[in-house]
Figure (cartoon, rainbow, N blue to C red):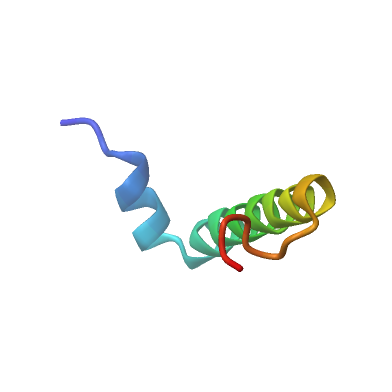
Length: 46
């Protein structure tokens, strides 16, 4: 049986933290892009 990438992330805390960092950077850049294009911190919310 082949191991899944999810199990690798659970078994290896370094990999889990690396994935978490990538997700945080992606969210930050998405929020920055939304703010620069719309001028609102959360687009659609007044």
